[in-house]
Length: 390
Ligand SMILES: Cc1ncc(COP(=O)(O)O)c(C=O)c1O
Picture 1 (cartoon, rainbow, N blue to C red):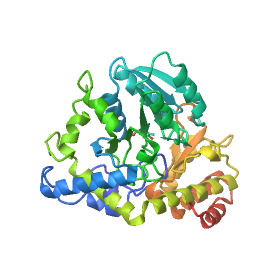
Picture 2: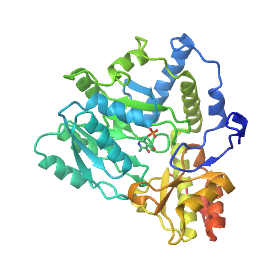
Picture 3: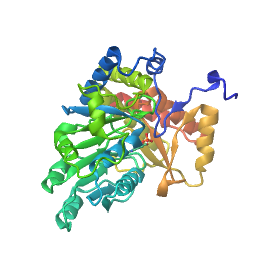
């Protein structure tokens, strides 16, 4: 394959932890003429994107914008703006992305405490309450990952913000693997600072980090004792470009914003509830198929994430051989395990365009052939037909 020939890039079916499949409509949007980042036509697209992000986030927050950078830029922005040197921060670590969040907060000079949750489990709110009650001094921020892509756990959030606010902290949430596939409900759940990524359930290529913060968080930002150490991710400056002032900060990644605008238009056309239901149905189909093939799922059904499923690799099966065959013989990507799950678990995504029956059955039928097992496709079709998704 000649690297210089763009036509030689194969069409893979992306059913791993992201990026997820991107529609041709979104890909074509990136080929539109590049406008200047202060062109009135581009500013109108920015306004539309901000409005649609508010809708997908479930918020009326004034500050809602896509940061230039992947999901990790969202994480970095969240901690760079809201963690000051010497601040006490509590991070719930239930997987790799929680660990990364704790690391990022510590690099800002935060005094980070970790509330450890075993990989594959969700945080028990009682545990958080005890930690907050028994803390030697109040925390400025409590942070956690809503959809932990390394474990396949969906952290229930209801009630947590009351707890966090009662103890005087801001609630900072990673919604990278949730946004567009399940309700984030920023306002209803009282989330103060939330970041996400485009390459998962929004079905847009990697490159932007949708971000929102409420007024309480912005008040704290305005009263910071020290300037935000990151010039590029300083939200008080970015707000002036995305807000009415249109103050130049950096050249917006224009083509990526076209892609996000198109992705959000597609979500609008489908409807959020229908989209969430489709993600539920696709994961139900995948779970039924995997289980019918005799494979066992890592996470309890009650907290199982429906954009990313973790499944135990059967005894005697070589992780890399199977993933290599999926990729090279079937053109399908799934993810391997991270950290303690490395070599023991596969991660299969049902995100965005991948959250449909056809891609799910393609993965299952390839796994049936490679693992010499049967029944997966049939069970998936049945589950898809009988699951309403609501
Ligand atoms: C939960 C979570 N947070 C943060 C990130 C980092 O995002 P990115 O890889 O786009 O920088 C990821 C990426 O997979 C993720 O799954």
